[in-house]
Length: 266
Image (tube, one colour):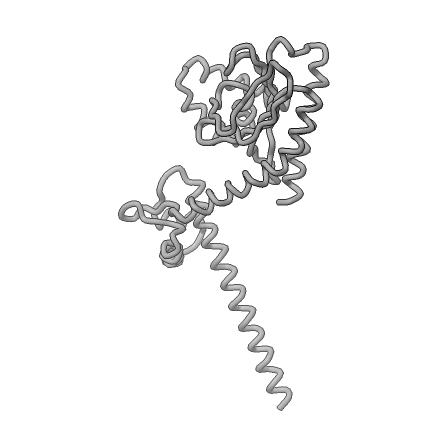
């Protein structure tokens, strides 16, 4: 009797494991579908999705139907599948959460940085082909740069934008460079990006505001993807070439501290 009961218990446990495994595999395949649509530069057919995920078309079709019910994917036209609105809403929510964490972590470090270098510090994030100031800490000096939160700046001009552009993933970077309207700037930006990547920072003079220097360093997430830039800016006449190296080290150290703290909470 005990032997038969033990067999039934073991069989039940095995079936529970099988259900769990099947569920996990289903979740993995569904995520693979979402990732394949995210990586694609166009809408995909069910057959193309099945090939990318390496599953039968019937399985892909069934998973797509389920994902469609939850708004994770949608049909653009007959046979054409793309990411759904729900994914965009989740991405927007995640971005807002990350921005809040970024600002709360960055603010005290920026205050210390501004006190050390006695110039305005600025925190920017990318929005499409532009950058937006999400936080700034002004110096108390009479002559200073003032940057309002929400100010939009170009991605291809000025330290704040270039420090982000230079450290974007290559595919994203290439797409962004294509949007630059000035042909001369578009041709010269590649060489400048190489220098910025090699240095680890971007230093500009008068590119956005006349007679203003900007020194920007990228801030990265736990996966080493650029998510913002930390900039110190002030009147060009106050840039001290002799002490420039120490100034750069101070800004780089502050940006690295923000990156480190972001990684510790991710």
